[in-house]
Image (tube, rainbow, N blue to C red; front, side, top):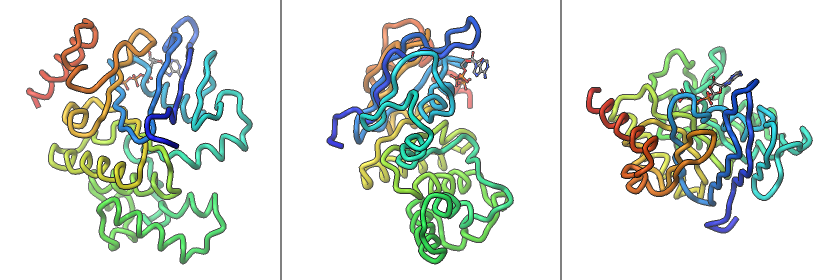
Length: 254
Ligand SMILES: Nc1ncnc2c1ncn2[C@@H]1O[C@H](COP(=O)(O)OP(=O)(O)OP(=O)(O)O)[C@@H](O)[C@H]1O
C-alpha cells in the first residue's frame, strides 16, 4: 500500500449502548506508514473503537475498511484473514501465564501456519531480538518478567505474523519514564524499519511528542480535532485544550 493511502478508513461509525451513543457518526483515517495517536477523555470511546476495528464488536451503523476491504458484515473467514494482517498489543500484555515466552510467541504461528516447531521457534527468537530482548528470556514465564519485559514480549508476539498494522492500547501505561521512553523509541524504529502503520491509544504526553506523526482527539462521539501534536496541544477547542492542560498538570505532579 502506497504511503498516504488509508490503511484504515472509518465512516459514519455508530456504537450505542442503550440510549448512550458512544460513537455518533465517527470518521477516521489511518494513513499508510504513519504513527497515529488516539486520545480522548475517560469514557470517550477509545477502547470501544479498538474493539470495533478488530471486529470484536459489531457497530450499529457505519463502514470500516481495512486495506480497502469492508470489515462490517464480513464473513468469519474474511475476518480471520484480515486479523492476520493486524498486530495487537493489549493493555497489560495479555500473555498466557501458563506458557513460557517462546510458547506465547509461537502460539499464533501454530494456529495459523504449517511451520515446523523449529522454524516457528527461530522466527520467535528473531521477533524477541527485534523487541530488544535476549534469547535467554525465551524460557521464562510471564510472572518471571518485569513490566517492561512483558510489554516487549507482547510486542514481539504482536509482530509474529509480520503484520502491516500495529494497534497498541496504552503501551507505556505502568512503565517508569526511562522504560516508557525506550519503548516509544522502539515503536518508532520498528515502524520505520518494517513500514508499519501504527494506531496507538495513549495518555502519555511524552509518547505523543516522541512517537506520533499525527494525533486524533475523540470526543462527543466523533473526531473533534486531528493534526500533529504541536497543533493539537495548542487547540482552541475547549475540550481539547482542557484535556492537554489536565495531562500536563498530572504529569508535573508525578
Ligand atoms: N459493554 C458495555 N456495555 C455498556 N456500556 C459500555 C460497554 N463498553 C463500554 N461502554 C461505555 O462506552 C463508553 C466508552 O467506553 P470506552 O471503554 O471505550 O472508553 P475509553 O475512551 O477507552 O476510556 P478510558 O480512557 O477511561 O479507558 C463508556 O461510557 C462505557 O461505559
